[in-house]
Image 1: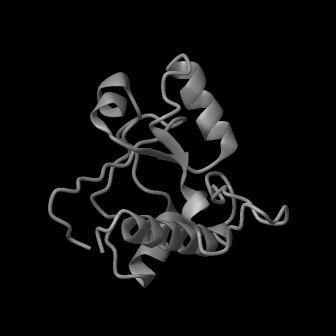
Image 2 (image 1 turned 45 degrees about the vertical axis):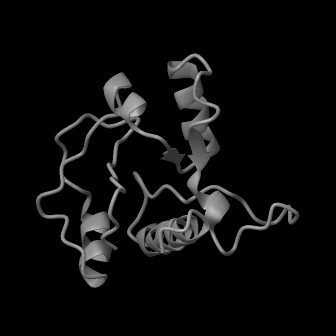
Length: 131
């Protein structure tokens, strides 16, 4: 999507900046017509964090790290991305608002992660009336 007045940046909590996308991420992106050839990781820092209106985290652990790093001053800014997934139901204990983080795992988890992220972002865009 190209949406006027919406800027998106990606940042990592645990990786150093400048790293190439993983092989699994590159492969699933190619299968879905995205090119990560020139992608380089960016580590979250105070400037980037303050720039953002919303910061999506994939897991509860990511949220906890952000809250620790920013002394709890991020409650209104940080959200679990999977909260917007079609498969998530807050009234069903068998569902989770977490997105599977494939970092360090096998290529099998990348397609599921891609699907969760895509679905969650599309639902967020709809909720916020961007699409």
